[in-house]
Amino acid sequence: MEIKELVDKSVKIRKRYHELEIKKHGEKWSIEEDLLALSNDIGNLNRLVMTRFNRYYDETPYSLEEKMAENIWWLIELSNRLDIDIEKELEKFLSTKEKI
Image 1 (cartoon, rainbow, N blue to C red):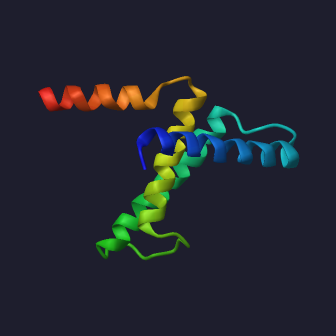
Image 2 (image 1 turned 30 degrees about the vertical axis):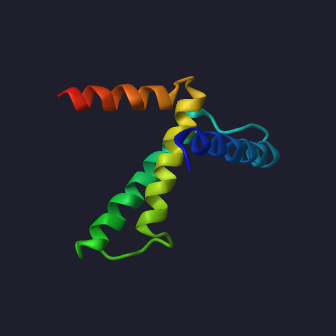
């Protein structure tokens, strides 16, 4: 799947989550709440990586691969909410790194 397709799919799924948030809490999560969720998931990712190298015990119901993908999903969501064209920025970032 191309990056554009992944971004579009991520945005559609997040819109459905916003509908649930409005239904349950009267409003969708703020950008700060999205960041808090990402921070929590990064912590879970850290523990899963440590577990893979026998430096921590596995206490999460997630796999490392699943949590890695979820963190990317959160970054796509945040870029969308902050009006950042993540595809363009990623391309620009990678081009800069290639030159270095």
